[in-house]
Length: 277
Image 1 (cartoon, helix red, strand yellow):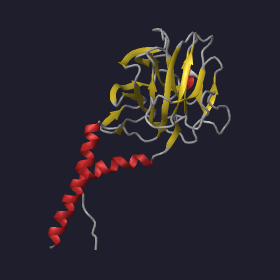
Image 2: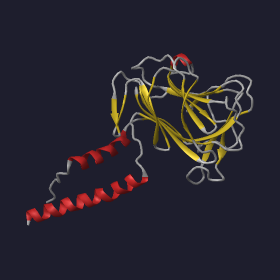
Image 3: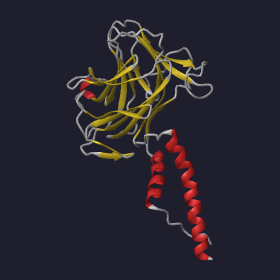
Image 4: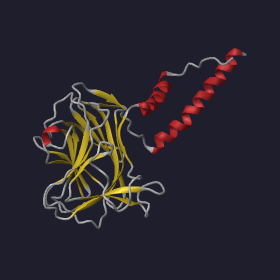
């Protein structure tokens, strides 16, 4: 008869990290279901997207060059050329909301695209498409990511540079609660975000001071906000907002976990068998 194994505490904690996958996915978008070359559907309650300004391009495109991983993939092309007015590309309100969690997505900025130093794609996270309903924001320029300014949603401090003509991954861990939160070996302060670029921490405890959304208000949507005059081009894919926080480990750490876990279990089973002999 098989009897229960008592695993070491550290191993149980490692296994417990995998349970975060069962948390609520608040939003996910792969763009694969859309027709290539056409504006991404929006405006109905069943759509992921609520509004797409007419001055901006937000189309699904075939990933024929396999820029992003996978076959038969599509991505979103977001582009503009000296747009006449500010644009908003906003999601519908999430069915499930949370004060804590993470948002992640992949992006690719072509080196050939013409961004000026004042062309910013603003990402606002909050409850609606206004600064007063924004909890946190980041600004993306060609090759550079900035935090938002302290008292309004504008350019703040430079957080990191990134390579063009390659896929990058951005993850925002958000804590809009009034208590600090532990996650993946880190602690995030109340009312702040941690920002990861390609799984490397580039901004820590960036405060909720970019908009007007109060702490303890659940995050319920996000939007991209190019300002008037914006010229630029960026590809987006694999967007997800999740109430769980799970920062991927480095490939080496992940490989070690896959090796150590089965070896440890096998060793414990062998020891248990000998003790029963």
